[in-house]
Length: 129
Image (cartoon, rainbow, N blue to C red):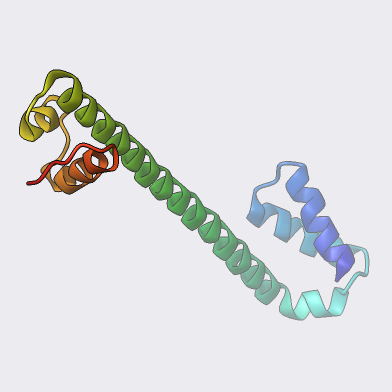
């Protein structure tokens, strides 16, 4: 079994496509008396099992990449909103703009209104809605 798996890996490293790597390894093992009888009887099952296993692993990789990208997008959005909140606070403090004017000037979604007020209060500026 280890020789068979090693041959599949060797073929993959030689840039074979997965299905070619598995089929070539099956034939190599049969030709070299490695699990010959088993592979003659069950070669197609071995092939199908390995293809399914690699497809599941590939799917996991895709799912992980998608999750990472989604996390990055959320992180970027959160970071941008934090900077916009900071900018709105500066505009209110420096130019005495209204909360609405400051939020509009930095294109901050109204759902962050309470966040801007909380930041103002945290900085010692009492601001009530």
